[in-house]
Image 1 (cartoon, rainbow, N blue to C red):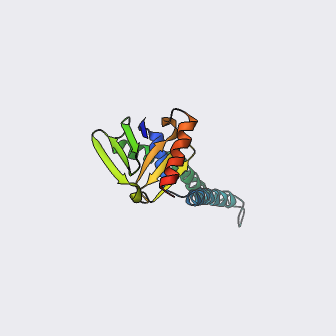
Image 2 (image 1 turned 135 degrees about the vertical axis):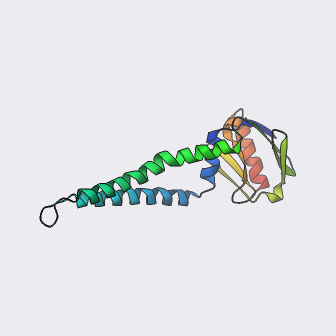
Image 3 (image 1 turned 90 degrees about the vertical axis):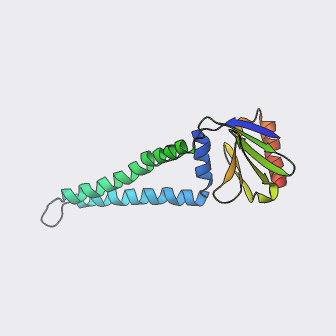
Length: 166
């Protein structure tokens, strides 16, 4: 079975997402939201009249600013960092070829080729638009589902890798 696709930012982003467990992603989102809300809430609480009716604008605006900065970093800066790192890979627009044989997986691009026997693949996973064959916790072969001509080919691929990597 041979699969060929053009590497895109969405493939790199899926790899970055797949490297973190769903539990870890939920914890990250909760922690960011919690820290942002605590800082914004603390800032709004400081705006309440205190002591002799004085408002603490500097403290309040500092806390609100920290909360908004946390949200901004998570929503705007994190995707920019991902895009920057993707650009550094030099893979943008490269054609990736993956060959799944009975004894090994071969991935190639621009004259470079990597061959992994099935025994070297430690696990497989999938997201809604991608499948991954993991060599270790940080490296894997990415296979986007849109590289398949139809659902039957995708299902045959998934059945094949499940038979090779339990």
